[in-house]
Image (cartoon, rainbow, N blue to C red; front, side):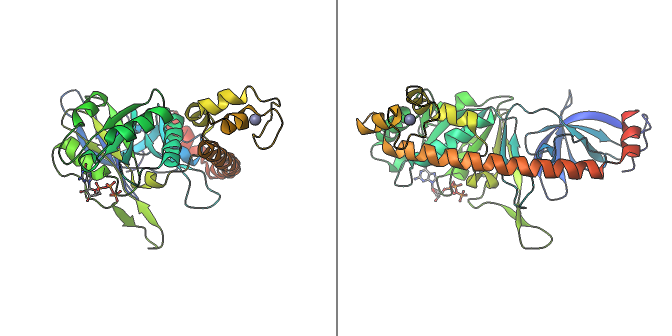
Length: 345
Ligand SMILES: Nc1nc2c(ncn2[C@@H]2O[C@H](COP(=O)(O)OP(=O)(O)OP(=O)(O)O)[C@@H](O)[C@H]2O)c(=O)[nH]1
Ligand SMILES: [Zn+2]
Protein backbone atom coordinates (compact mmCIF):
# COMPACT_ATOMS: atom_id res chain seq x y z
CA UNK A 1 0.00 0.00 0.00
CA UNK A 2 1.33 3.41 -0.91
CA UNK A 3 1.36 5.94 1.82
CA UNK A 4 -0.57 8.85 0.32
CA UNK A 5 -1.12 10.99 3.40
CA UNK A 6 -4.66 11.56 2.17
CA UNK A 7 -7.11 11.32 5.08
CA UNK A 8 -10.07 10.26 2.95
CA UNK A 9 -8.16 7.23 1.66
CA UNK A 10 -6.68 5.90 4.90
CA UNK A 11 -8.29 5.00 8.22
CA UNK A 12 -6.42 4.65 11.48
CA UNK A 13 -7.42 2.23 14.24
CA UNK A 14 -5.96 0.09 17.00
CA UNK A 15 -5.77 -3.68 16.70
CA UNK A 16 -4.61 -6.76 18.59
CA UNK A 17 -1.89 -9.01 17.18
CA UNK A 18 -3.16 -12.60 17.25
CA UNK A 19 -0.45 -14.37 15.24
CA UNK A 20 3.02 -13.59 13.94
CA UNK A 21 4.28 -15.13 10.70
CA UNK A 22 7.52 -14.50 8.90
CA UNK A 23 6.28 -11.62 6.77
CA UNK A 24 2.79 -10.87 7.99
CA UNK A 25 0.77 -10.48 11.15
CA UNK A 26 -2.78 -11.62 11.86
CA UNK A 27 -4.66 -8.88 13.63
CA UNK A 28 -8.06 -8.36 15.19
CA UNK A 29 -9.58 -4.92 14.76
CA UNK A 30 -11.95 -4.43 17.64
CA UNK A 31 -15.13 -2.66 16.62
CA UNK A 32 -18.36 -1.92 18.43
CA UNK A 33 -20.49 -4.42 16.56
CA UNK A 34 -18.05 -7.18 15.66
CA UNK A 35 -14.32 -7.76 15.47
CA UNK A 36 -12.66 -7.95 12.08
CA UNK A 37 -9.76 -10.27 11.31
CA UNK A 38 -7.17 -8.85 8.94
CA UNK A 39 -3.66 -9.53 7.75
CA UNK A 40 -1.23 -6.70 8.35
CA UNK A 41 2.24 -5.83 7.20
CA UNK A 42 5.00 -3.73 8.66
CA UNK A 43 7.33 -1.49 6.69
CA UNK A 44 10.41 -0.46 8.60
CA UNK A 45 10.47 2.98 6.94
CA UNK A 46 6.98 3.79 8.26
CA UNK A 47 6.95 1.88 11.55
CA UNK A 48 7.67 4.09 14.53
CA UNK A 49 10.53 2.58 16.45
CA UNK A 50 12.46 4.45 19.10
CA UNK A 51 13.47 1.47 21.25
CA UNK A 52 15.31 -0.72 18.77
CA UNK A 53 14.39 -4.26 17.77
CA UNK A 54 12.57 -5.36 20.91
CA UNK A 55 9.73 -2.99 20.08
CA UNK A 56 8.67 -4.95 17.01
CA UNK A 57 5.16 -6.25 17.60
CA UNK A 58 4.46 -9.72 18.94
CA UNK A 59 1.43 -11.79 19.90
CA UNK A 60 -0.75 -9.91 22.38
CA UNK A 61 0.54 -6.49 21.35
CA UNK A 62 -1.82 -3.63 20.70
CA UNK A 63 -0.80 -1.74 17.62
CA UNK A 64 -1.86 1.36 15.77
CA UNK A 65 -2.69 0.53 12.19
CA UNK A 66 -3.65 2.28 9.02
CA UNK A 67 -6.00 0.62 6.53
CA UNK A 68 -6.83 1.70 3.02
CA UNK A 69 -10.06 1.18 1.09
CA UNK A 70 -8.95 -2.24 -0.11
CA UNK A 71 -8.59 -3.39 3.50
CA UNK A 72 -4.77 -3.54 3.45
CA UNK A 73 -3.44 -2.88 6.93
CA UNK A 74 -0.09 -1.39 7.78
CA UNK A 75 1.26 -1.41 11.35
CA UNK A 76 2.42 2.05 12.39
CA UNK A 77 3.32 1.67 16.04
CA UNK A 78 3.26 -0.77 18.96
CA UNK A 79 1.49 0.66 22.01
CA UNK A 80 3.07 0.41 25.49
CA UNK A 81 2.96 -3.07 27.02
CA UNK A 82 1.69 -4.06 30.46
CA UNK A 83 3.72 -7.28 30.49
CA UNK A 84 6.17 -8.94 28.12
CA UNK A 85 8.33 -12.01 27.62
CA UNK A 86 11.54 -11.78 25.66
CA UNK A 87 13.79 -14.34 24.10
CA UNK A 88 17.37 -14.06 23.05
CA UNK A 89 17.78 -13.07 19.41
CA UNK A 90 18.92 -16.08 17.35
CA UNK A 91 21.21 -13.70 15.43
CA UNK A 92 24.30 -13.00 17.58
CA UNK A 93 24.79 -9.35 18.52
CA UNK A 94 21.14 -8.46 17.87
CA UNK A 95 18.73 -7.31 20.54
CA UNK A 96 16.33 -9.64 22.33
CA UNK A 97 12.90 -10.14 20.81
CA UNK A 98 9.50 -9.86 22.45
CA UNK A 99 7.62 -13.17 22.19
CA UNK A 100 4.36 -12.40 24.03
CA UNK A 101 2.82 -9.24 25.42
CA UNK A 102 0.00 -7.89 27.58
CA UNK A 103 -0.91 -11.10 29.40
CA UNK A 104 -2.40 -11.10 32.91
CA UNK A 105 -1.23 -14.50 34.13
CA UNK A 106 1.64 -16.83 33.37
CA UNK A 107 0.61 -20.46 33.76
CA UNK A 108 3.72 -22.39 34.81
CA UNK A 109 2.82 -25.88 33.65
CA UNK A 110 4.61 -28.81 35.29
CA UNK A 111 3.61 -32.46 35.49
CA UNK A 112 3.36 -34.32 38.78
CA UNK A 113 5.87 -37.06 38.02
CA UNK A 114 9.64 -37.54 37.75
CA UNK A 115 9.79 -34.57 35.32
CA UNK A 116 8.91 -32.19 38.14
CA UNK A 117 11.97 -30.05 38.84
CA UNK A 118 12.35 -27.40 41.54
CA UNK A 119 15.17 -25.57 39.78
CA UNK A 120 13.02 -25.27 36.69
CA UNK A 121 10.21 -23.88 38.82
CA UNK A 122 12.59 -21.17 40.14
CA UNK A 123 13.54 -20.31 36.58
CA UNK A 124 9.91 -20.05 35.46
CA UNK A 125 8.95 -18.00 38.51
CA UNK A 126 11.81 -15.59 37.88
CA UNK A 127 10.79 -15.13 34.25
CA UNK A 128 7.12 -14.77 35.21
CA UNK A 129 7.69 -12.12 37.90
CA UNK A 130 10.06 -10.29 35.60
CA UNK A 131 7.44 -10.19 32.83
CA UNK A 132 5.16 -7.98 34.91
CA UNK A 133 2.31 -10.54 35.09
CA UNK A 134 1.25 -12.90 37.90
CA UNK A 135 2.42 -16.53 37.96
CA UNK A 136 0.01 -19.43 38.60
CA UNK A 137 1.44 -22.94 38.91
CA UNK A 138 -0.53 -25.59 37.00
CA UNK A 139 0.35 -29.13 38.10
CA UNK A 140 -0.82 -31.59 35.45
CA UNK A 141 -1.57 -35.30 35.11
CA UNK A 142 -3.35 -35.54 38.45
CA UNK A 143 -5.07 -38.74 37.30
CA UNK A 144 -1.68 -40.47 37.01
CA UNK A 145 -0.34 -39.23 40.35
CA UNK A 146 -0.84 -41.14 43.58
CA UNK A 147 0.03 -38.26 45.87
CA UNK A 148 -0.75 -34.88 44.27
CA UNK A 149 -0.65 -33.19 47.71
CA UNK A 150 3.08 -33.92 47.86
CA UNK A 151 3.69 -31.73 44.78
CA UNK A 152 1.22 -29.06 45.86
CA UNK A 153 2.98 -28.76 49.24
CA UNK A 154 6.38 -28.65 47.58
CA UNK A 155 5.31 -25.73 45.36
CA UNK A 156 3.58 -23.91 48.21
CA UNK A 157 6.74 -24.09 50.31
CA UNK A 158 8.97 -23.04 47.43
CA UNK A 159 6.74 -20.22 46.17
CA UNK A 160 4.73 -18.85 49.11
CA UNK A 161 1.73 -16.83 47.99
CA UNK A 162 1.70 -18.18 44.43
CA UNK A 163 -1.55 -19.92 43.43
CA UNK A 164 -1.30 -23.65 42.63
CA UNK A 165 -3.87 -25.72 40.72
CA UNK A 166 -3.55 -29.51 40.44
CA UNK A 167 -5.45 -30.70 37.38
CA UNK A 168 -6.06 -33.55 35.02
CA UNK A 169 -6.75 -32.34 31.51
CA UNK A 170 -7.88 -35.88 30.67
CA UNK A 171 -10.53 -36.40 33.39
CA UNK A 172 -11.23 -32.69 33.89
CA UNK A 173 -10.48 -32.96 37.60
CA UNK A 174 -9.40 -29.63 39.12
CA UNK A 175 -9.97 -27.69 35.90
CA UNK A 176 -12.67 -25.61 37.63
CA UNK A 177 -9.97 -23.96 39.80
CA UNK A 178 -8.32 -22.60 36.68
CA UNK A 179 -11.48 -20.74 35.63
CA UNK A 180 -10.94 -17.88 38.07
CA UNK A 181 -7.94 -16.74 36.03
CA UNK A 182 -9.91 -16.71 32.79
CA UNK A 183 -12.89 -14.75 31.51
CA UNK A 184 -13.62 -11.91 29.11
CA UNK A 185 -10.60 -9.74 28.43
CA UNK A 186 -8.16 -11.94 30.39
CA UNK A 187 -5.03 -13.22 28.69
CA UNK A 188 -2.81 -16.06 29.89
CA UNK A 189 0.46 -17.35 28.56
CA UNK A 190 1.76 -20.90 29.04
CA UNK A 191 5.29 -21.82 30.10
CA UNK A 192 6.38 -25.41 30.41
CA UNK A 193 8.70 -27.98 28.92
CA UNK A 194 7.79 -30.48 26.26
CA UNK A 195 5.47 -33.30 27.25
CA UNK A 196 4.07 -31.78 30.46
CA UNK A 197 0.65 -31.52 28.82
CA UNK A 198 0.31 -27.90 27.67
CA UNK A 199 -1.52 -28.73 24.45
CA UNK A 200 -3.82 -31.19 26.21
CA UNK A 201 -4.51 -28.54 28.85
CA UNK A 202 -5.36 -25.87 26.25
CA UNK A 203 -7.63 -28.31 24.43
CA UNK A 204 -9.40 -29.03 27.72
CA UNK A 205 -9.87 -25.29 28.32
CA UNK A 206 -11.36 -24.91 24.85
CA UNK A 207 -13.48 -28.03 25.04
CA UNK A 208 -12.17 -28.99 21.60
CA UNK A 209 -8.92 -29.84 19.85
CA UNK A 210 -7.24 -26.61 18.83
CA UNK A 211 -3.64 -27.62 19.43
CA UNK A 212 -1.51 -30.41 18.03
CA UNK A 213 0.86 -32.03 20.45
CA UNK A 214 3.99 -30.91 18.59
CA UNK A 215 5.27 -27.35 18.24
CA UNK A 216 4.26 -25.70 14.97
CA UNK A 217 7.17 -24.45 12.93
CA UNK A 218 7.81 -22.78 9.62
CA UNK A 219 11.12 -22.84 7.79
CA UNK A 220 12.57 -19.53 6.79
CA UNK A 221 13.68 -18.83 3.25
CA UNK A 222 17.18 -20.17 3.85
CA UNK A 223 15.80 -23.34 5.39
CA UNK A 224 18.56 -23.28 7.99
CA UNK A 225 17.05 -21.62 11.01
CA UNK A 226 13.47 -22.21 11.95
CA UNK A 227 11.24 -19.33 12.88
CA UNK A 228 8.48 -19.98 15.30
CA UNK A 229 4.85 -19.43 14.60
CA UNK A 230 3.31 -17.64 17.54
CA UNK A 231 -0.38 -17.54 18.10
CA UNK A 232 -3.19 -16.56 20.38
CA UNK A 233 -6.16 -18.84 20.95
CA UNK A 234 -9.47 -17.09 21.56
CA UNK A 235 -11.73 -19.03 23.95
CA UNK A 236 -15.51 -18.82 23.77
CA UNK A 237 -15.71 -17.03 27.17
CA UNK A 238 -13.64 -14.15 25.78
CA UNK A 239 -10.33 -15.15 27.35
CA UNK A 240 -7.16 -15.56 25.33
CA UNK A 241 -4.38 -18.09 25.59
CA UNK A 242 -0.97 -17.36 24.11
CA UNK A 243 1.07 -20.34 23.08
CA UNK A 244 4.55 -19.55 21.89
CA UNK A 245 6.75 -22.56 21.23
CA UNK A 246 9.80 -20.27 21.50
CA UNK A 247 9.14 -19.77 25.19
CA UNK A 248 9.73 -23.39 26.02
CA UNK A 249 13.43 -22.61 26.09
CA UNK A 250 13.19 -19.40 28.03
CA UNK A 251 16.22 -17.73 29.52
CA UNK A 252 15.80 -15.49 32.54
CA UNK A 253 17.19 -12.45 30.74
CA UNK A 254 18.19 -9.46 32.82
CA UNK A 255 15.87 -10.52 35.61
CA UNK A 256 16.80 -8.47 38.66
CA UNK A 257 13.21 -7.84 39.72
CA UNK A 258 12.12 -11.43 39.02
CA UNK A 259 15.07 -12.77 41.03
CA UNK A 260 14.28 -10.54 44.01
CA UNK A 261 10.72 -11.87 44.19
CA UNK A 262 11.47 -15.53 43.50
CA UNK A 263 14.38 -15.63 45.95
CA UNK A 264 13.06 -13.18 48.52
CA UNK A 265 14.18 -15.59 51.30
CA UNK A 266 17.82 -15.39 50.15
CA UNK A 267 17.63 -11.63 49.59
CA UNK A 268 16.28 -11.29 53.13
CA UNK A 269 19.06 -13.44 54.64
CA UNK A 270 21.67 -11.48 52.67
CA UNK A 271 20.66 -8.33 54.55
CA UNK A 272 22.34 -9.89 57.57
CA UNK A 273 25.66 -10.81 55.92
CA UNK A 274 28.62 -8.96 57.42
CA UNK A 275 29.76 -7.61 54.05
CA UNK A 276 27.35 -5.72 51.82
CA UNK A 277 28.95 -7.18 48.69
CA UNK A 278 28.98 -10.72 50.16
CA UNK A 279 28.95 -13.38 47.43
CA UNK A 280 27.77 -16.00 49.93
CA UNK A 281 30.79 -18.21 49.31
CA UNK A 282 33.29 -18.52 52.15
CA UNK A 283 33.08 -15.01 53.61
CA UNK A 284 33.02 -14.76 57.39
CA UNK A 285 29.70 -13.65 58.81
CA UNK A 286 27.70 -14.85 55.77
CA UNK A 287 24.11 -15.25 56.97
CA UNK A 288 23.14 -17.15 53.82
CA UNK A 289 25.80 -19.85 54.30
CA UNK A 290 24.85 -20.05 57.94
CA UNK A 291 21.23 -20.77 56.93
CA UNK A 292 22.47 -23.54 54.61
CA UNK A 293 24.58 -25.03 57.41
CA UNK A 294 21.74 -25.18 59.91
CA UNK A 295 19.23 -26.47 57.35
CA UNK A 296 17.00 -23.40 56.99
CA UNK A 297 17.97 -22.91 53.33
CA UNK A 298 18.37 -25.89 50.95
CA UNK A 299 21.79 -25.82 49.30
CA UNK A 300 20.12 -26.62 45.97
CA UNK A 301 18.25 -23.36 46.21
CA UNK A 302 21.38 -21.28 46.85
CA UNK A 303 23.23 -22.94 43.96
CA UNK A 304 20.33 -22.32 41.60
CA UNK A 305 20.12 -18.70 42.78
CA UNK A 306 23.79 -18.16 41.95
CA UNK A 307 23.40 -19.85 38.58
CA UNK A 308 20.42 -17.70 37.57
CA UNK A 309 22.13 -14.56 38.90
CA UNK A 310 25.18 -15.24 36.73
CA UNK A 311 22.92 -15.88 33.74
CA UNK A 312 21.05 -12.63 34.34
CA UNK A 313 24.29 -10.63 34.59
CA UNK A 314 25.55 -12.17 31.36
CA UNK A 315 22.24 -11.45 29.59
CA UNK A 316 22.35 -7.84 30.76
CA UNK A 317 25.84 -7.26 29.36
CA UNK A 318 24.95 -8.91 26.06
CA UNK A 319 21.73 -6.88 25.84
CA UNK A 320 23.47 -3.56 26.45
CA UNK A 321 25.99 -4.22 23.70
CA UNK A 322 23.28 -5.32 21.26
CA UNK A 323 21.08 -2.34 22.09
CA UNK A 324 23.81 0.18 21.35
CA UNK A 325 24.58 -1.55 18.08
CA UNK A 326 20.96 -1.69 17.00
CA UNK A 327 20.19 1.92 17.92
CA UNK A 328 23.12 3.05 15.79
CA UNK A 329 21.79 1.03 12.89
CA UNK A 330 18.25 2.41 13.32
CA UNK A 331 19.65 5.95 13.28
CA UNK A 332 21.45 5.23 10.03
CA UNK A 333 18.36 3.77 8.37
CA UNK A 334 16.03 6.61 9.32
CA UNK A 335 14.55 8.40 6.36
CA UNK A 336 13.92 11.96 7.57
CA UNK A 337 11.82 12.96 4.52
CA UNK A 338 9.41 10.06 4.92
CA UNK A 339 9.19 10.51 8.67
CA UNK A 340 8.34 14.19 8.32
CA UNK A 341 5.57 13.42 5.87
CA UNK A 342 4.02 10.87 8.25
CA UNK A 343 4.23 13.19 11.26
CA UNK A 344 2.61 16.04 9.37
CA UNK A 345 -0.71 14.18 8.98
N1 LIG B 1 -3.18 -39.14 31.88
C1 LIG B 1 -2.95 -37.89 31.47
N2 LIG B 1 -2.19 -37.69 30.40
C2 LIG B 1 -1.96 -36.42 30.00
C3 LIG B 1 -2.50 -35.29 30.68
N3 LIG B 1 -2.10 -34.18 30.05
C4 LIG B 1 -1.33 -34.59 29.02
N4 LIG B 1 -1.25 -35.93 28.97
C5 LIG B 1 -0.49 -36.74 28.00
O1 LIG B 1 0.88 -36.33 28.03
C6 LIG B 1 1.44 -36.35 26.71
C7 LIG B 1 2.03 -34.99 26.37
O2 LIG B 1 0.97 -34.04 26.35
P1 LIG B 1 1.01 -32.73 25.42
O3 LIG B 1 -0.24 -31.99 25.71
O4 LIG B 1 1.32 -33.07 24.03
O5 LIG B 1 2.26 -31.99 26.05
P2 LIG B 1 2.90 -30.58 25.61
O6 LIG B 1 3.35 -29.94 26.86
O7 LIG B 1 1.96 -29.81 24.78
O8 LIG B 1 4.12 -31.06 24.78
P3 LIG B 1 4.84 -30.29 23.53
O9 LIG B 1 3.77 -30.09 22.51
O10 LIG B 1 5.91 -31.24 23.10
O11 LIG B 1 5.37 -29.03 24.10
C8 LIG B 1 0.31 -36.78 25.78
O12 LIG B 1 0.44 -38.15 25.54
C9 LIG B 1 -0.95 -36.48 26.58
O13 LIG B 1 -2.01 -37.33 26.24
C10 LIG B 1 -3.31 -35.56 31.85
O14 LIG B 1 -3.81 -34.65 32.54
N5 LIG B 1 -3.49 -36.87 32.19
ZN1 LIG C 1 26.55 -13.78 52.50
